[in-house]
Image (cartoon, rainbow over all chains, first blue to last red):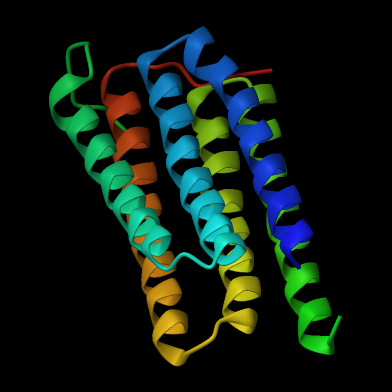
Amino acid sequence: MQTIYFTLGSFLLLTLGAGIWRALRGPTAADRMLAVQLFGTTAVATTLLLAEAFGNAALRDVALVFALLAAVTAVAFVRRAWPGEEVECDSE
Amino acid sequence: MTPSDYVASSLLIFGTLFFFAGTVGLLRFPDVYTRLHALTKSDNVGLGLVIAGLAVQAESWFVVGKLLLIWLLVLLAGASVAHLIAKGAMRRGVQMWKR
């Protein structure tokens, strides 16, 4: 089982590396934020796999913090840091 | 390997495949809205499957509860963030992709 945990964890890290391309490329700020969301979810999964592989329960708390931070970051981005003027859209 | 090991490893491998699909979608889809669709759904399912696989192997019910709580938090956050980003992009005039 150890081998499976490590293999899958490394694979998830590789997909994270691929996701960095989107964060660098953009083109809009929202695309970069989506890449950050991907990092958040994948980091939670990787940390949980590592917690099981190392038998280290504290890493589960780290995963919980990752999940919380990803949510807070995205909300802060949408409400505070997203450049551009907001207009009412007519589809509401 | 015991039978529960087989169940756990297949769940984990399926979950990782969903993560892979989400990343491919994020890289390949043409605009914010379609990327949002690929990312938030498949990643949440992938994490759900990974957590199910880990819960099969977990040593106590306390750990299972904690894993479930983490998944619920990610689900809730993912759904709200998807809506927030989509609505924000609409209001800032990000164009939808047309063929």
